Length: 140
Image (cartoon, rainbow, N blue to C red; front, side, top):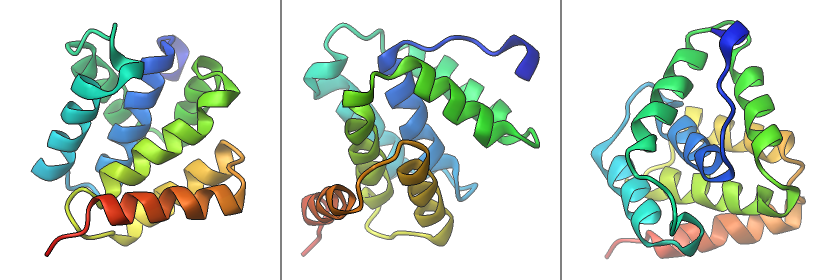
């Protein structure tokens, strides 16, 4: 697969990050899928995005997760597609997906850490983004 990696649009890269967080614990939860769909349907950054691309991007992420260096390849694609000013947006979307089901699982936390490192998210900014995700997804 790594010989024929597709290029991603910036929106595809954001979707790839969200799918990667969801798939990181090998249990793609309904709440996470709904969160991804909701964000793609309602956020301004996705206004011109073809929602049918989610499936293609998800299949790419799943295929990369099967490869030995797949995560590194995924982040290479994401960095190539995303302008640096959208790195924090990607992290925020990943945090929202992780928080969507109300429970942060260890593999999701590790994936978020990987995203922080790969996209060089400032630690203070990351804490603020994480806090925002937590408070947006709190339950009574």
